[in-house]
Length: 382
Image (cartoon, rainbow, N blue to C red; front, side, top):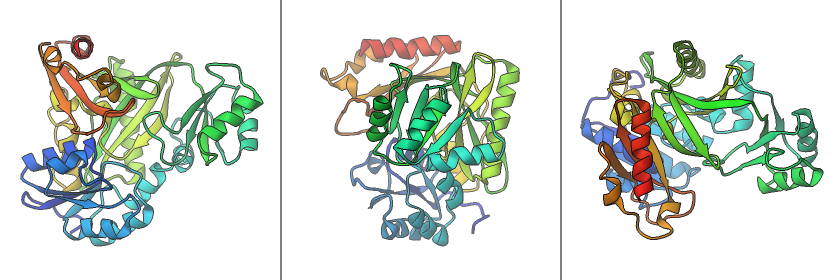
């Protein structure tokens, strides 16, 4: 069963029912599959498009078992699933990616050393377990540090900047340690960044590997604001980035998707930032501009189908719609959709909150710059 193709009519289980699970489920249903998800919220974004929601927290072994028992294969849309729950799933049905890859990626204090041990390029960093270690580490890393909590941080949560916005003092370091809950973390030296890119690699159980072209990403307050394909980088850098993503996926034994976020410095160096073993916000535009979207590719990889063609057929871009857009009243979606080529994607989340991803706008264009300007103009009209 672990190596066989699962034909249409089968059931895909997804650990997590957020917007990524929702969009994977929509792709799976288009291809003729049934879909079940596990999520703490019965009315999660995926609930409106799946056959069943198994309600359970991320470490709920019994709920994970119920999901797996009625599924032909399992994938995930969030990596913070308890290892015991993952192990139980893997004992019942093919889990893609597997337990060990997820265990490493879900904890930055394991992920970053793993990358370094396997000689993948990473910037200077240290693992810190206490305030005293952090005080020493900040000094060793030139007093300009990004501190990232090991487990549970995302979309800017669980991260704090030290020495980048104000002078570094013992008190500011102590406050930073307190702000992340005094939990094990990675301290990364700030790099002389030019820009950020990501590459989505895919690998199925048959060993087929494909990478999407690199995306260029722009963050605001540590949350992705917009992303565009192609990234507009040199052919040499494109080859390096795609090769790096494929090599990391192979080294981890990934079956499914692996998004590799990367830093490009002003000196032209390429460093791995973080890994995500699932669909990623920076590839939502693949639904518009690539022969195969990241969501369909995730389904193909999980069910051991041949991987789809990842080549770009049109420049494309997305801009995120955070809950902030709703805080001054209902957005004017009609005005936004007057911009030619723009589509609206909402996740059916019920409560807008500042910083919460509620949806995105996507567009294609004759160039990457045109596609990006279209979505930015549409957002301005909201």
